[in-house]
Image (cartoon, rainbow, N blue to C red; front, side, top):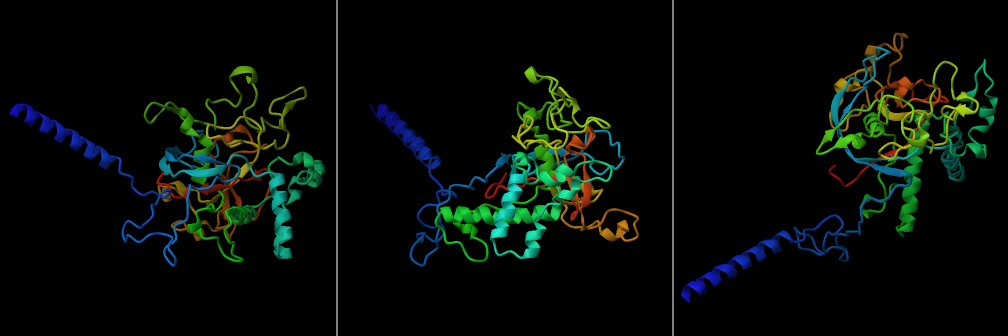
Length: 397
């Protein structure tokens, strides 16, 4: 009998111990979304009169037109033969944190919307004029492109074609306007008082981080979309020369077999193929939703238009920048003076920015996400547009 009682007691203690450990493991700790009623370090309740106010938070709001890009380790650089012999994007391993990016290039209709709201604001006449794209980028002395000069930006048929004739500086101004405009609407919808001047407090939890140009590393990482090459546990079956699988620029599968996967210049004088069977369907730009998106859901990360990125150009940035979220925003460690721009011995100075992706006027070589070129930040062409990016706030990956 005593043995049975001892056994029962041991069994009860074991059950109680397991239950206690289970209750400990199921204990709910405060989170950003559920901070609890009171501070865990002072015991004072939140949101009391004259006390610390903790607003409701359900995560970073969805940003219009943006898709989530999960970050991770990647190998940046060009896998193509370096036909320009620049050696300015040699392969190296980096980690890029998660971020958001526009699924499409910014289109004419988006830019016209921007111009409209700027004209309705109290902006100066000078700034309103500065929002005008340079439509003369279509003009050429020995070609008849006058119809694009007059119609490409404003004619309704071109609404969802990528805006061009926009400089890096203009793209940056657009990002600032978009940040302020979208956040103001989010605050109004949440019935939060919008200050006449200054930023809506981040503590409200209803506003978005800044819209901005993507860094070169973010852009290249998003274009390659290596998430689609994974097999098993952290194994990637192959690298990518383009934002899609394979070494060809035509679709190898199904009913669309043989169709071009991007809008680019096939060869000298060949912008679209022959009538009746145009190879890419676009002699100039194509609509922003043309062609299949890559594995991140991004359209036209190769071809259509090149895209401005945030980085200042330096030929050896890959040797200088950090291996976590790399970017070059200044000439730190690679000063402009050594390039002798003033004496016309170099095109590199502190006003040249990187652009990537290839365009309707470029051959397939430039479709490789690892290739890179540069242009003065106040210059514009008919082959360069842009899209916006945004950090993923409140996240450790």
